[in-house]
Image (cartoon, rainbow, N blue to C red; front, side):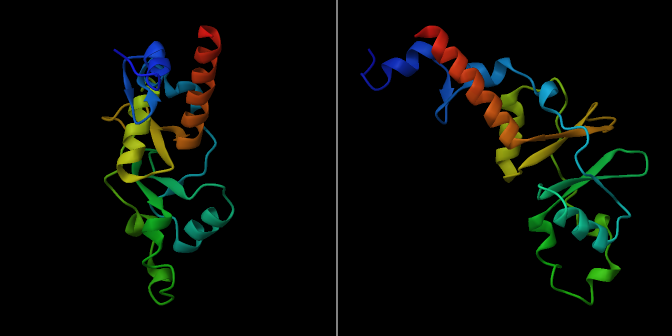
Length: 163
């Protein structure tokens, strides 16, 4: 039934997608991967504050929060590109003018699969984590790298235990 190429994969899981074992991605949740002290911007942050945050951070995406600490958007390097070199316009802008409003958010109990799927739709390196999609209270961020590292670790542990 299996070829010599797919036999090893089928021993681990019958549910793979994109070369990944979906059982692992669905079984683990993001709550341990939340970076609570990641830089965030506020809707009234000036363009210079946005640039300074970008320059002093290892990230290229930042959640935008309102005064009640609720997620209202995200700013990525993609969002900055159109206004980056417009020196006449830039001083007049605040984070709310630049951000993308339609952003996916994660909940602490989301699986790695859910988080990775949301990130891959718009090619985000990170997404904000909120208490609930209704309340949108900011909890931190989860990065794609941390999800992939966790997946690889769990996949390696599973592979070693079956050998």
